[in-house]
Image 1 (cartoon, rainbow, N blue to C red):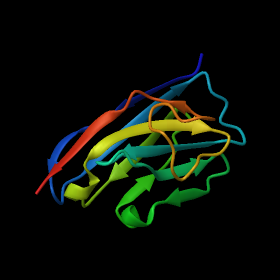
Image 2 (image 1 turned 60 degrees about the vertical axis):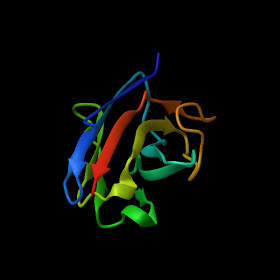
Image 3 (image 1 turned 30 degrees about the horizontal axis):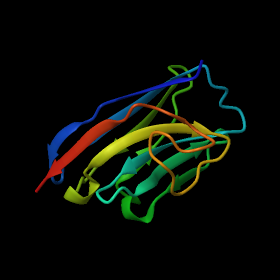
Image 4 (image 1 turned 180 degrees about the vertical axis):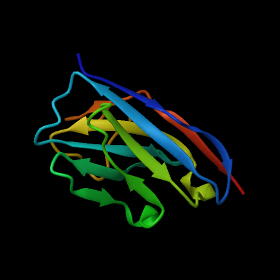
Length: 125
């Protein structure tokens, strides 16, 4: 059974930081990709950042220089460090895993991926 569990969401003021973490079980990360999506107002599901098993990373243009993705193989987690948060970052964030991740998908239920339950991030001005 593949299971992804997110943690670390919450409410912060603009300019603050949060660290999300995705704990993974039952999934072979070899030759695959893991990442974080966010469900924005208007139901756009955007791939925020991802990391492949070979260590290569992807960032959406809107978060470059502010967010950092990594992998902790010893603890089976994929953290996302979010700095300099803006109100536009407010969304439900979902962890996902698959062979390859689409840049846009259906948060929580998109095809060809496993999904976590989501965690709310709220950034106030």
